[in-house]
Amino acid sequence: MTTLFMTHTECLFHDTGTGHPERPDRLRAVFHAIDETGYPDLLRREAPLATDAQLALAHSDAYVQKLVAAIPASGRRNLDPDTVVSPGSAEAVRRAAGAVVAAVDAVFAGDADNAFCAVRPPGHHAEPDRPMGFCLFNNAAIGALHARQAHGIRRVAVVDFDVHHGNGTQARFRDDPELMYLSSHQWPLYPGTGAAHETGVADNLVNLCLEPTAGTEDFRRVWSETGLPRLRAFAPELVIISAGFDGHEHDPLASLNLTDADYGWITGEIMTIATECCDGRLVSVLEGGYDLDALQSATRVHVSTLQGETAPPTEGS
Image (cartoon, rainbow, N blue to C red; front, side, top):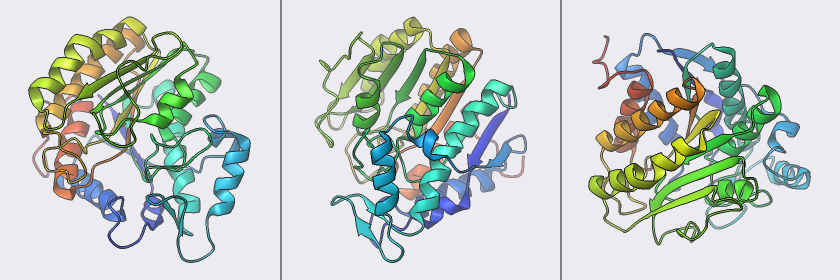
């Protein structure tokens, strides 16, 4: 099985400042996980720059222009208490969105069976007209809408296992019955959206709420009983994963107790449904994950599973 690893070093230059949890070292940890493990069959490509038109697939034209204009020529600027831009953000945000667009194209072209986009800033909190929660443009939503525009499909599902609810993706998908958003997340927690009763225009939103300190048993139960059957019934033509690893037991920003094995399990289950419904077409994009060691180990399991491995290969294998 061929997995595309899509990234760009320019994503390191989105500078959020000392002490900010969404820092360049997150991406360095992912790079280290990939390079240390080896992955000789991994197809590696550099992410292109997303165009304004591609960014506007998930956002208003006015928002795209406003966000681009807000990026400073020097120093840093806070767009809200959590969300920061710097000169390097101008290219980083376009590489992050462009990675998902290009990965979608590669999967439809048959260049790869699936893809993992290791990019920052993350995207699932970015609403159509508002940045928030470290997020500027909604990378997963842009990829989903690009797939519909460029590849003649209609039904796209975004599966989100980040510990925080992806309010931005939900806001963009809520009123379109051919877009499904499925999220498991700690509840209550930032950003305060994602209650179970939020179901969308055609029951196309599936919010799986996990109590603080929930772990393996609860996570696998809600996905097995509700999330995965709903995904299968939707019969997507493409699956996009918002791969947040901040539900890990060691992550500092929340209090779920997931393990590396849980991320391998959910990845494999989503892959099975993608194989059944859409010839395996699946694109994963990095969202959260703020403990560097946990992010590194969970990424290794995620990518190994995408490649069809039951466990990460040993270094040099």
